[in-house]
Image (cartoon, rainbow, N blue to C red):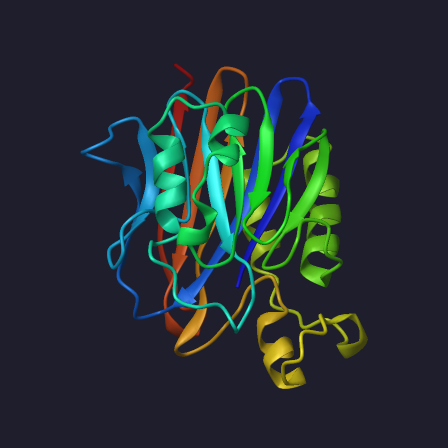
Length: 248
């Protein structure tokens, strides 16, 4: 499970605001966000098991992030979904062109969010490809627009916070909400209700699986802010990294 809350072109000076949680097994090796030695313009964490990344941006103002599309019947994919993010960030393709030329069958189910500096595109190998209009959105492990509580309530909370001057710490705090929604609002995917309760909060606490990182990316016309708070097993707070740089 993962969560991406984002506001797109809701302010003329700020094309994109993202607040995202990465949920993953705590023993899966990864590195915290940094500029990559092999691709110096890319700022992202890195999956040290299969390569790629779950979320990142570039000095030129490109952005990409991915979530798994929940389907327990999925056969293993040939390639790691994190490579989809890496390949976009290191390319010069427009978001539309990249989305339209993916070899989607090589991967397990995914939702992929792509921003090329001009357009924001959401594509999925389990659904459609959409050029998004300005607004506030929540994306998790189902189609964009799914009425999951953390998507609907999270997007509304993001809107409330960012309609005025805000600190990035406020968005990290939003992502830290571990409240469990009422059972009647939870997704119905044929899984035990205990499972749905465990993964329903914005922030998932667990010994073996849970939220590993909360990341905030604010892309303005001439400036980018990036902050990432990491977490360990049972929600123990790890390190915080922060970056701010001009758009090239």
